[in-house]
Length: 279
Image 1 (cartoon, one colour):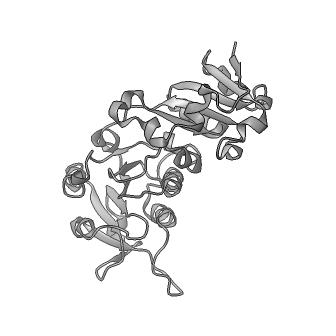
Image 2: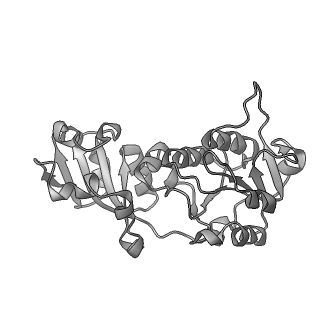
Image 3: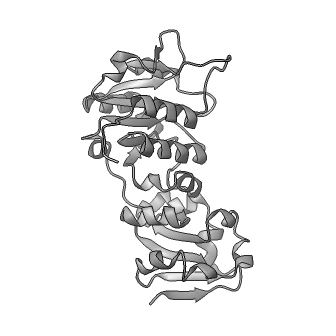
């Protein structure tokens, strides 16, 4: 039987994890094993559960308990299911975007770079991409367009932040990912060395005098390729570009010099992704 708990006051402590803890507090950097994240909407929650994430509690609009939330609640045993009327729940910032359902979950342990890249042929590297919306959009493109894994430098926004996971439509739970190093000093030199040791050629998405087109035959023929995308605004660091095997440009028209990093990722993954993988 579901463990339904009625909430009548927005200040109830049971709502702290959903309403008052920051992303940094949820992440719990000092004790990552106790870290949490919030999955928003039935689709994102379903994909998180399918990936083996451990649920802690639900927050569900009352009218959904016997409808769209019913099967997901049934999958999770007797964990608390907090519920309230819509006017109470809409005091939570952004609740109207959640399709009436939130789930607090424990953060899974991250794999190593070698574990997720050992059998990969196409991976994406995100260098200091800080906007959670962009991170989520890149993951969604990666899942759709043949990317086997995503690696993030330590300066990136965490893919399990609420907005990232929501924008990704839960694909952050389908595409293997991890951080390439724990400190900013681990990238690019040490990170590049790890990629090369795994057999990857590196392709910096950047404009420079010696850039090759994204449909360059030699680039597309590489057996193992790491596509590296830079931060919003400034793009990739010069030292990263200098250390890559290729510098790659997307041909533009009408005087446009570049695309948003999320849009650029979709173009790059479509052209260079592993389209022989199973759906």
